Length: 266
Image (cartoon, rainbow, N blue to C red; front, side, top):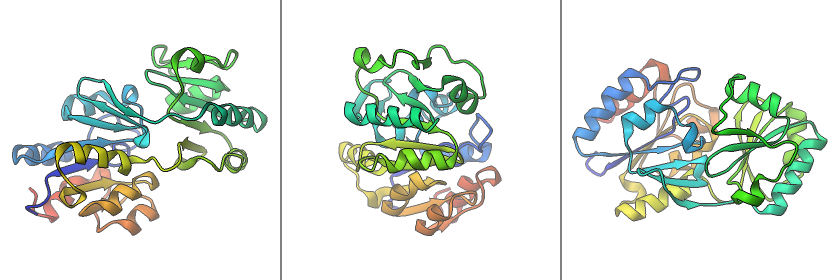
């Protein structure tokens, strides 16, 4: 394992069991050992930086954070290094489709998620009904946040599967991933976690041959496939497991620790 110089981790279902807000304790222990050995650590998540759990920020202090499924790269100073935005025409058409098909949508901007349809449903589903007034806004009525603050980097949609299908079929120009049942994300075509990880690798003088990636969902498939060692969590999707070099135990059952132990990195 001498070639492995960087560990890349998804968050939800990988570092943190779903329903929790803290990194699985054995994962912290294992990652600390790896860092002491000089390995770099990178977070690659579907979350916006401002929605990343504090335990991840405080524990990792990573040089970079690949966020919004690769649409935004943040450095350790919380500055945007690179971002990819939706075309305004796509945004407007997707908003119209969401209104027509009764789908809640929140757009992911630099510093906040702003809904353009069905804020109450979005609030209840996305954050359990708990207001986040600094980072989650109701823009349903005016739908003009992008005119003053720039275009968003993606849309997060919530609704019945049949209605989500209607919106997705009407937006073939975008790339889509399933976030969880009755929730999907839409982004600019061709940009994902792996493409932005490649930018970081280039900046650090590394290649995929130096990477061990960990993930659990379909949006992790590319980074699992490209890494020298791709690890899927036992609780992961069928696609993540099919593309992995190794399937470890569940996130909440010492999955990361067991994988790093299996490959003699700890």
